[in-house]
Image (cartoon, rainbow, N blue to C red; front, side, top):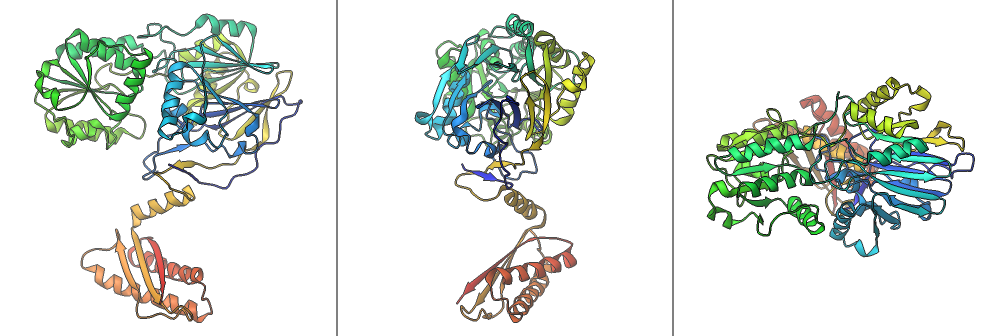
Length: 573
């Protein structure tokens, strides 16, 4: 899959000087959930924190995902000392196979599980042999000249999550990554409160802190509470139990597997990402199960009594091609809903996915399943801290400056309000957008640069695609709402005079009794526009096409109140 570029780029920021030894600028993650990428410049050294993807919204028709625009780093590749990954979720590592070659394969660091997921992404594109992948351990200090990088233990919804401290001669830059404070986490230790407090005591210049749930009061639920709810559902299920959740929620998957073991159920896995993540986690010891407990979905599943079957599947967000959606439609190759099946959605719909999830739930009910969701039971908890978690992080780390990161503008604004409630002045709170640059001098004073990076969305759209992403999206939107018209002209090669009338093919615009009348009229409109342009001396193919395009655009706008995509084709004879 190749990136498509949506906007013309502007020059990268000027090389830092000793007067401004530290510069920070986000290339994603500060105006949306996903596409996380932060650039840290210290003197001549550059560090990147995360290379994540962003899943498309409903208006991004057909695209796979978006990745950060790293054009501002062009010409600086030899200054990139390392890419630092906070954890293994795709919104933090998912762009690595697309962007690492462009960045000339700088060294990559992350905790063991995180780097296993990075390696898997690179394996799929045959790039692993070119990459420099290093496992980091919590508390270890990795030296890059005068700079040291440290990974600190935090809890999130995937094991091995880390905050990152970059220790510079001018002060410590602290990045929380995605975090919450879970005092009773499942299958892993809690956050390293002691080390966080030690950082705060020594002094932190600036903290970039997760803002996702800054609008929500209190603290986020512990995974232990979710485990208790799941335990009860598995215990009470009379037939098969089908559980759908994110394939990266390894702590949740471990809970479910433990409950299956307790109630003598075999666990059958459906979904490629679920199979892959469980396999990696088992190999590294982050997910434990007795031999033979976990199996792939297949015909052999039907040989077991329903009370001995648990199915883990992808599709908790209503994805059309995922396992749960196909089960609901009755099109899954190996799984059909049986009377007495209990389906559990152990997740909350991501914003924008609500309708898709509701459709899947309705389909499952129609098939006769008993469906349990987080609307009625404690079946999901966030991996992002609420207001009190954010407060606690600031109290522990005690930064001089705060940059609310990771989230949409209203989330980061709510985070700024939290900082103000703690006594921080506005001059210490820096709300930034993607492409904005904040600079710190040697005395720790901060100012936002007048320069801003102008860049566009980079979309990943199938295999071998190329072109300008903005045009692709605009064309798809036009076709989805107004249809398309193809006009084929036959013209003499030398004179460009027409041979007969053009042919018109319409899709998604006119049907039924009006089709013949409107098509005939459109043929004459197109022919007239072509001949008039030719009569004005415009015999360039592009000029002739523009004339036809404009005439048909005006005709359909007037006749049907529609603005279809018009595709003129000139065949020379």
